[in-house]
Structure formats: structure tokens, C-alpha cells
Image (tube, rainbow, N blue to C red; front, side):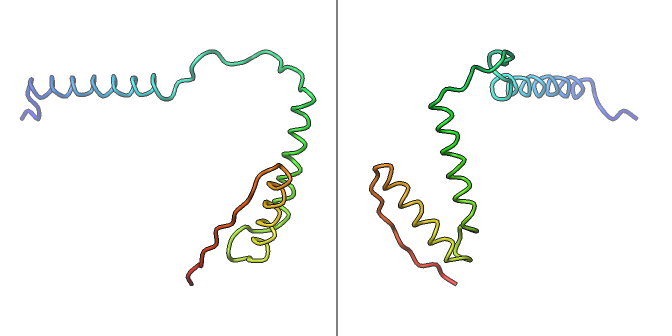
Length: 104
């Protein structure tokens, strides 16, 4: 007893080839890394980059010290919001708060 005919075998082979071609096309367009990998030594960090790194580290440490930033710990959320307001103000930005009620 035959489970497949010659025509169904050809159709399955064509389908398999199309699927492989589609996977290769997806890999080619979306996944593969374009260009060459950087393998040389990194250039020396500039003074501006060092200052930016230290500033970012300070901000991350400050934010992480406030605790959770959600409505479960409302005190920590308010401290975080106040700190962000202050930092944006020091950077020259105006801050407007938008308040909303959280349902229980």
C-alpha cells in the first residue's frame, strides 16, 4: 500500500524548498549582523564620556535607593517623583505632573 503519490512527493519537496528559502530570507534580512564585528582595541574614553558615565551611575544608584516605584509603596513613589522633578528642573526643564486615581 502506497502512502504517497509521485505528485504529492513533488509538492512536499517544493514546499520544503520554499520553507527553507523563506527561513534563509528571514535570517538574511532580520537576524544576521550587518557589517564587520569590531575587533580592535577600544579608543580611550574622553573626559566628557567619563563625566557622563559617572553622572549616569550616580542617577541609577540614587533611583535604586528609593525602593519600589509603584503604588504599592506610595512613599517611595513620591520620593522618586520628587527627585525626578528636581533633577529635570536642575537640567533646565519644566515639569508638569499629571495625577490620576488608581482603582482598588
